[in-house]
Image 1: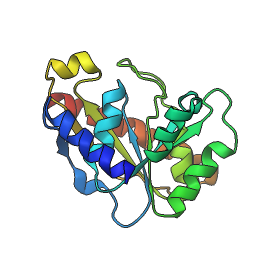
Image 2: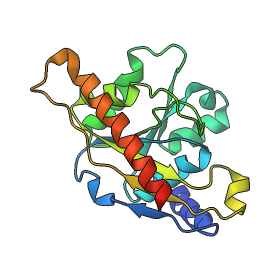
Image 3: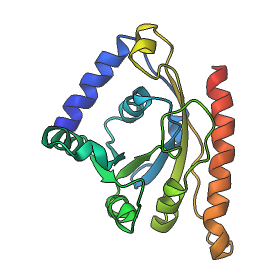
Amino acid sequence: MVYYFAGYLLKFLLSLFGRLKVYNKHHLPQNEGYVVACTHSGWVDVLWLGVSILPVKVNYMAKKELFQSAGLKWLMEHLNAFPVDRDNPGPSTIKVPRKLLKEGKVIGIFPSGTRTSDEVPLKKGAVTIAATSKVALVPAAYAGPANLKELFQRKKPRLIFGEPIRLQEDAPKKMQVDIMMNEMNEQFKKLQLEINAK
C-alpha cells in the first residue's frame, strides 16, 4: 500500500511541473518478470520510471548507503528497493533480483551506476541479471528535468522504451552476455537520439 500511495502521489506532484510523455510502452513484456535498464542523469528519472509503468511495481537496486538509517531503510524497503554494494559486489548482488524475477516481478536498474549527463561505460549488472535469469532486458532512455531546479524550469519530461533484448541461447555461451551488452549499448544510443529529438 505504501508503494501505490507514494507512486500515485508522486505522479500527481510531478505532473504539476509537466506531464510525462511515454513512448513505446507496448515494448514492455506482459505477465512475466523483466529487467528495465534506464539512462540516469538525476533523481527525477528514477521517480518517473517507476510512475510510468504503474500499476506495475518496479523493484530498484539502490546503493547500500541509503539503507543505513532506520527511517530511510524503512522507506526504501516499502518502495521496493533493495541494497547493493557497488564497491564490492558479491553473489548476493544478483541473488535478490533473480529471486524477484522468478516471482514475475520487474527490476529497475540504471546501468551507468551514477548520475551523470556524460557518456560513461555501462556496467554489466543489468545484462548479467537478465541473462542469468533468462528474462527480457528492456532499455529505456529519459530526457527532461534531472533535479528540483529543472523541475521548476518546467523542462518537458519524456521517456522511451526500446525493444526487449533476450539471451541468444544458440550463440556460444561465453559470448551471450557480450552480445546482449552490445545490443543494449546500441539501443541506448538510438533511444537517446530519438528522445532528444522529441
